[in-house]
Each structure stands twice: as C-alpha cells, then as structure tokens.
Amino acid sequence: MPVPARAPEVAAEAPAADSGTPEPAEEPEPEEEPETEGDQEEPEHAPMSVSAQTVDRHAGRRRLMAALWPPRLSRGQLVVALLLFSLGLGLAIQVRSTNDHHSQLRGARQEDLVRILDELDSRQQRLQQEKAELEQSLAKLENSSNQAKEAQEQTRKKATELGVLAGTVRATGPGIVLTVDDPQGQVKADMLLDTLQELRAAGAEAIQINDVRVVVNTYFTDVSGGGVQIDGKKVSAPYRFTVVGNPQDLTPALNIPGGVVRTLESHQARATISEQQKVVVDALVDPKTPQYAKPAPK
Image (cartoon, rainbow, N blue to C red):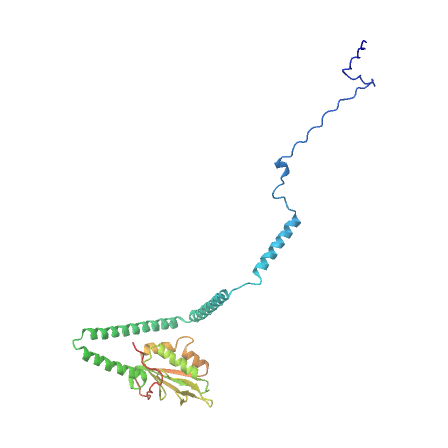
C-alpha cells in the first residue's frame, strides 16, 4: 500500500505578528573587568585628621614622661652624681674665695700693692738662697777629700739650726719687736695665732711671745678671766713678739690690707712694730721625748 508523503519540516519559525514596531535585539551584557592590584591597594599613609595628630602627640609625651620619671638610677650612677655635685660645689667655693681675694687687692692702694709684690719677691729670693746653700753643702760632701770630717761639721751645724727651731738654743739676729696693746681686752687667742702664722709665712726663724718660746707644737687658749694661755702658760697684755728674721719681709707682711695690724685695730687694739738690727730670743723650752712618734725607716 503506498505510504503517503510526509510534509516538509519548517526550517524557520513563522515570523511574529506585525505589531508595527520591531523589538530590539538583546545586547550581551559587558563582562566585568577584574580589578587590578593597583585599584585594590589603599595608600600606605592615609592623611590623619588634626584631632588624631593631637591625640598621637599627647600619647607620645605621656610615654616620654613615663620613661623619664621616676628616674631609675643604679647605685653606680648615684655615686657618680654625688661626686660630680661635690666637685662642682668645691669649685664654686674656690672661685668665690678667689674672687673675694681679688676684690680686696682691687681696692688696695698702689703703695700696698707694691709692698705685697716686694714681699713675694723677697720670699722667692729667700727660697732661692736656701736652695743654693743646700746645693753647696751637697757639693762639699761629694768633693771633700776628708768626707768624714766634713760630714761631722755639717752635722754639728745642722744640729744647731734644729736647736733654734726646736727652741732649745738661744737665737739672735736682725728682726722686729711687735708690741700689741689691748686696753679693752678684745684680743683673743685666735688673733695671736693669726699673727704668729703671718710671721712664719714671712720668714720668721725664731719667735718669742713675752717669756714663752714659740715652737712647732705651740698652742693658744683663751682664759675665762681674761688673757691668753700659750703652751699652758698665762700671758697678759701687752703682748710682745720678739722675732728673728728679715725686717724688710716681716714688717710689710703685718701691714698688708686686711692683715694683722688692721685686724687688731678693728678690735680697739694698737700694734707697734720696731725694726732692729739685733734682737735676742732667749726663752728656751724643755724638749719632750715623743711617746708615739718614732723615726721611720728609709
């Protein structure tokens, strides 16, 4: 039986009904571009606001103060700080005392300054002379043919000189006599001690106060009823200093501005200086054997 022919397949869909306006074709959506690394990264240092900067500054100050206070000092640092403080204090005191001394000299008269310079020159000459004498004695000991005899002579001479210093031998020579009148009783032991020290600094070789010989261990004390004790012996005014030494050195030393004479006059005392070509220091002391001091081995 014959097979009926099939109808041909429609290759395309039938066109849509005509509505008068053609429908636009759908456009494909654009693909999203991947973000690059540069777009994703934010700037490293974003600008800070004014309030944030103020807070950060205050926080830094607080951290700094917390680090500095309270101070954390070790024992070694504390010792070093105390040493530096002591050194600074000592330097300040030294500078102040030097300035006070300079101010006194600045207000002195021209003749007083000349006198002080002459005194310093005399002291230097005296030290140079002593040095020359010692060098001469050494040369004699080294060059003498009879060194034993020369050594004995030098020893005898030295013993006499030491006797003068120790107060066991009378002394004579040029010098001065200083008389201190004290009608008001204002002169104390410390004033007499200052006078003695000034005379020693000016080159005094032998000193006697009234009838007391001054030696290396001489001491002064005040007496409650008036007067002064020297080495335990009471001495009353007027105080008479008999001094062996160069008068040209001793007198200016006592008369310098602010010196011994001016100090005594400020306490209603009167000091009189008499220069003499020959004075005699005849007061002697009884030497005592030292109880504790012994010659040290060389």
